[in-house]
Length: 251
Length: 130
Image (cartoon, rainbow over all chains, first blue to last red; front, side):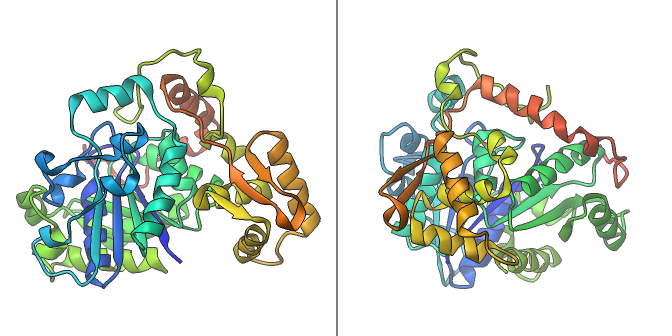
């Protein structure tokens, strides 16, 4: 059965889109057919990681939710664009980066029910093994829906006091919505923190599994979203840790 | 407001905002009703047989008895959360549309999530870095 995996963080700047793209690449490299949807409609960005530019974006998720196209028309096969051979398939459903489209969303909202219908259509028509949902930070109706229908949820947080409370709320919301599998990824951990101690501390605080503690990485910073880290650095410790996360999310 | 709070322009009294299923209400449903709604939102629509099979697969112990499922389905139908066509074993269920998003809905999310404030009173697990 196909899986829906949501990637969420309460605050922005945690590395959510990067993590979504990397998990997508890991699973596709294993031979799976993977869709990745950018539901961060207010501040889209994951298309950059997959090398999809605006000129080649005929339709977007925005066009689907406002009835201008069907969801499959907004899905782009970006497998050949990731810069490394991939056994499986990657389909990206980007959000629009046009100012008018974003302002319409902010002004009018949309029928969130379109999203779950679209997800199911994508899974069926593209024969997806996995659909990864890159959510908007914070909590809104579309995020709650994504969490509610997910088989697994990865919550990204930094070891930062500002992230702590929001992550706590998200963990509780996920539990109330009966998400079958919930993991936390601690990202951008500074080198002065002991990863094992940090993992134990966060697991105790949230009573939830920490699937990985990812250190701050100069290579990741240097890449600056111009590619997919796990494909560029296949033997890097962060890549190995993300592979473990992918395994946990798929179990 | 933090960057996490979604501010959207839009009329606060738009009746469309109160129509349909909402994530906040989903959290407050009794367990069997919530399980049914999660399945229907995921699969869009399910036959009676497929729904009961899926519910049984979700159950960690014994699946909920048929009478309990019937009562949950009736309650959801009465609340306007699902649409039913056909009867008994020939029935098909479909989730009512999720409500439209807009500014009013957003503010309610954070008001409602105040119920989670207990969790916010705990001290941070790690020292802050920024």
